[in-house]
Image (cartoon, rainbow, N blue to C red; front, side):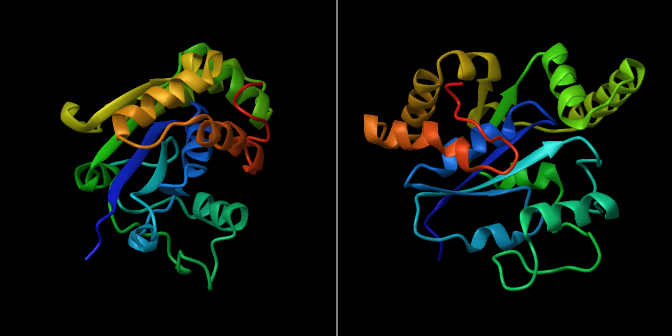
Length: 206
């Protein structure tokens, strides 16, 4: 029987979920996977928390079917093929909806970022020129976000701006709420965690 608690990070696309997941995953008591839509993330062992990060963007969070193109890209970028924790699946069908993941989680961390910064990051990282298209896509993301069902009793909100402005204080506050060690050595390790992420190649202090 598993004794680890489940922690889930959820946010809009380009809201900072990757940076936060990278930092939390560097904590010795947290094992974190990114955008795993199967129950394979439960195979993580040896820590107090097993985690998963889900972004709200390209698919409906109330459905289990994932976009085929997006699933293929995630397989390539995340190296999620045969032999890893996640097993290979030809057809992109999730084991759970995002609402079901929220329900099974012991702790849900919601990352919040203001709209103009999300759009700015989206435009820069995906090289999108059209402001109209960016706003159209953001409204679609918002509609999907509004379908989520959070329980405030186990939901923690992290504000991206505050996390970047003072990452050590933000992470320490989060660890206190999770009842995990937060000494200087652990915090240094977490602050460096984002350096080793494929999508966010800089520490939170930059």
